[in-house]
Structure formats: C-alpha cells, structure tokens
Length: 309
Image (cartoon, rainbow, N blue to C red; front, side, top):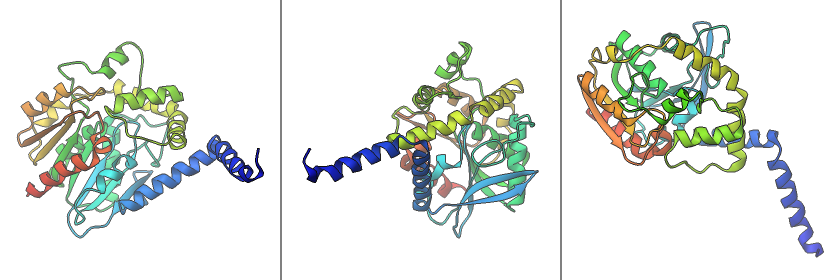
C-alpha cells in the first residue's frame, strides 16, 4: 500500500470502528435529535405534575397555543419536523406522556388510557395552559378525545391523526398479527425494529444506519416496560365511540390510507359520530403522517387552524 493512502485508510478504519461502537452511535443519535429540535426552534423543558416529571418541547410564539401528543411507544420527537411547518405565530408544546420518552416510567402504576389522560391533565394544569388547540396521533389521539370530553372549555379545536380507540370495520395488519400472538409495536431485537418501521410507514424515511441502530437499541431497552404498558392498556380497554358525539369543538381527522396499524376504514366511524368534523385521507401514507409527510400534514392542520374560531 502506498504511504500516501495510509492516513485515509486509517481514517476509514477508525470511522468503521466508531460506527460499530454503541456509545458513538448513541452520541450521534443524540446530536441528530438536538439538531432537529434546534431547526424547529424547539427547546426541551420539564415540569413536575401528579408525582411525575414530564418532559416536553416548547416553541415560543405570540399567538395561540398548540399541544401535540404522540402515540404508543413513541415520544415527543415524533413531531419535530411537523412543527417546522406550522405558522410561526403559534406557541407549540409537545409532551411526553407518562411512561414514554423522558417522562417518568413508574412500573408500579397501571398505564391505562385513563391513567395517561389524567397524567396529561396534570401536566396541562402544571403548565398553566388555559385554552389551546390539541392534536394527537394514534394513542395520543385517544387521550386527546378523552381529555377534550372532560375539559371542553379548554380545547379550542381537536386534530386526530390516525387515532386509536375505535374497532375498525376492516381488520388492520396489526390486529391480525396480535391475533396470531405477535406484537410488532414492541420490538425486542433489531430485526423486530425493522418490522415496526414497516408497520409504521408506507414509505419509510431514510435514517442513516448508525442512528437507526441507536434508535432500535432504545426501543429494545424499553421493550419490557412497553410490553407492560401494552398489557395495561388492553386489559382495561374502553371504546372511544361513546365519547365522540360529545365533541362540540371543530375536529380535523387525518388518516393515512396505507395505515397498517389502524385501518383507514375507521374513518367512517368518526364521520358518523363527530358533529363538526373535517376529514383528510392522505394517499400513500402510513400510520404516522406527521413523520412520513410532515410538510403536507402540517399544511392541512395549519389550514384547519386558520378556519377555527
């Protein structure tokens, strides 16, 4: 080997060794998340409420407040790129629900949907939020419905993105998997994590492999607790449908037509029961539109907010 090529070979070898190091991958992942937050003008904060420490992201704005809730097993960073495309006048708060993200994980508590909703209500009170627009994806949509029915004076408008809680007329791929004794939403290996991504997205966004590995490892590390939460929620399941007719505020329903987690046929249930509903079905999109199509999804939401009183 020529001596002039030796430094390059050493550098490449060093990078390969570092990329194979889980500590380096985690550092790279943390730096990536930090950069994404800064680009969206979001800053991480925390608040004590109901005996828990809630982690949240906040973007300052002179206008009304928008609060965003993630789905099962996810966290506040699911919304970072979505927030980038919201009008700058809105103040935005993105909260990690109990047991998720950097919010307290208490293995002694039973994480039912009611428990998650009460935790969110405690966080709202601690943050002194008076009236705000609320949006939730998947399980966060279910929590948003329950909170809105119990606190109608606080919620100016509601946005439900592929929300959980209603039995779909057609079974989803996830429902069929669960009936077979599988649970793709609780990955226990990197192969399982790839399966989770295939369920979450129709067109999976590109994630560099060191960062993807670090994200997979994070899900795997939390798999035991996530499985407990899944069992808690489904052992104490409730139907969201009786609550839908009590929603008097304007509601926007967004659903990806290729959702494998919650079948798009559920749209008909929400259309039947919510009085003031606007519906958007996104073509060639999976379960998390705010991640898969952040600009388009945020554009629909911004237009809805412009029309809300």
